[in-house]
Amino acid sequence: MNNIEELFANQALELRRGTIVLAILSTLMQPRYGYALLQALEEAGIPVDAGTLYPLLRRLEKQEVLASEWDTSDVRPRKYYRLSKKGHQLYDRLLAEWQTTQKTLNNMIKR
Amino acid sequence: MELIDRYVYAVTRHMPKGQRQDVAEELQTTIQDMAASHAKSGKPSKEDIEAILKQMGRPETLALKYGQGPMYLIGPKWFALYWQTLKQLVTIVPPIVAAVMLAVNIAQGVGLLGAILGAIGLAATVVVYIGFWVTLIFVVIERTGANPNEFGGDAWEPNALPELPAKRQVSKFESAVALATIAATALFAAGATLITVAGEHAPILNPALWQFWMPALLALLAAGFVIELCKFKIGNWVPALAAANVLLNAATVIFFVALLTTQQVINPDFVQALQARTNGDLSGTELSETASWLTGIAIAGVIASSVWSAGESVYKSWRLRKG
Image 1: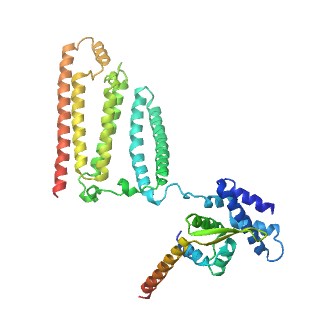
Image 2: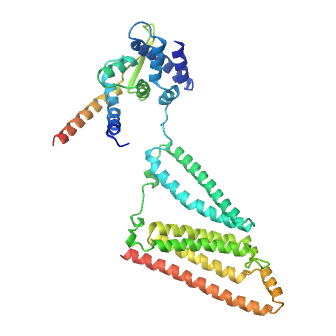
């Protein structure tokens, strides 16, 4: 498990894992249904596995970070996700944390 | 689209009722949407659907991800303590069990090879049992949400750190010799009470001792074995170790004095056979005088070595605290 490809892949995975919730929260500032969220993330350059995203959305909903509604207007009923009040709070704090981390890391790297 | 239905069913069938329908409907729509964009134009073909389903992964795995629990048995929080406990138990218990089994086998007249195989077999079984139960217990603990720190899992004594090889009070040679002596004593005691030397008619030492004294001796030796292991591992006479050693020596003295003064250690059958062979040249009183002599010497020897061992451990423990 020592060649550079594997080492990089593992660390890159850790980075993605660390930031995925922030990405989801920011994308859901505008309510979307699951598949649209998946596409938005992919277009933004953050590809997520459908098998990872949907259980994660459900978990966030259980933690009351997200709220959902069924939209039955279309031929196919679709589940819409949006940020709950707790979700907004979490997003604000996570965003601040992210910006602090960025600044700190950048400062460190510049030296 | 039956394929999609079957996939969704496979994922959701073991889910709790409340969750099932919600997940199923969402999954249905998602897969259809994904298949539609995969198709690029028109209605998604069977190949499109199959490609998407493959991308979603095994239904059982997806169902697991929807599940609540952690996807491991023992996590990082408890693993260190678990592994340490497992290692300690597996190194201490099976050898003791094997030794006892060996002695019991010999006592029951099983041949030496059979006795050894039986002992090894039992030790292997014990290892499996220990592995299973320790693992099971830690799997349960992992799921209670408790913290190892609260149970002193992180507590350790700097004094009990193993010494650098040059600085150890207890040399590895000393430990090896002690462990070998204990093993040899156990085998000798077992053998002498049960095996009839070629040409004689009975074992030298009294088999009746197996009713209580032999098991007691084996227990004493087992305790000594454990103490030797701790001695080896820590390398220095920490107070707890010295105290244990003193207790063990005291118990040994009491045991041997009681044994030698109240019990017929030499097998009466052996004595009889000896007398019969020498045609009565050996009188009863001569034999009992010799026996008393031997008993006295044995008791003195046991007391001397026990006092020495206890004294040495206490002195070295004192030196340890001073320096």
